[in-house]
Length: 289
Image (cartoon, rainbow, N blue to C red):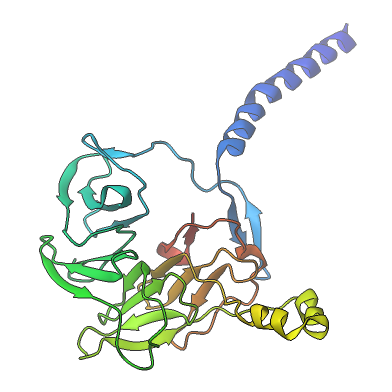
């Protein structure tokens, strides 16, 4: 009799575990991201899911997004969305309320957004070849076109994909096809170009090294035309440190100091197949989409 009761208890425990544990696994499997934490040696290791999505926002009061490429949060918690295919910027709340719609005659494909300390809005538009600046009231202030400074390079691209602004007003721009690094613009200078910053490296594999010995001059010339990958995301934290994301092998996520050097020693955990964006939070937390 005792053995039978123990057997029943065992079966009940198994059934209970199936009901308790299985839903958690289903939730974890449905989340499209992984969470990491630092261990005692400073290495990043997998940990339990930090956040679970509860709601999807795809419109403000019926104004649906079409190919939205970027978002930025204001200090009051409101949201600016780069509604790229609709050639506009939409301002609303996290509850879906619509505050304003910004359209501008020179917008072609607005893709990157940033706010400065005065709540001025910056819009990066690669097909317009410019960064647009608007006031906190969404009034047009200024347009930043391709720099003419010789150090920028006459033949270098200026197709702004992403933009951010540091506390001193220096504008940081990621330009499509420009492998020299992040473009720094100083709006107080006659020629706004300041410098290139934190360029990605062109890393050669053992295979590439071997090819240099066996390829013809024509084949080598095509190899030499290969450029380092351009980052796809940009963020500046409160301390002025710059974060970039690159869709390429060991480049991954970088944390750049004022000299443009990467502060992450171990990049193994920062390699993502298709990273889209990066932002920092409190307590040195980093969020990658």
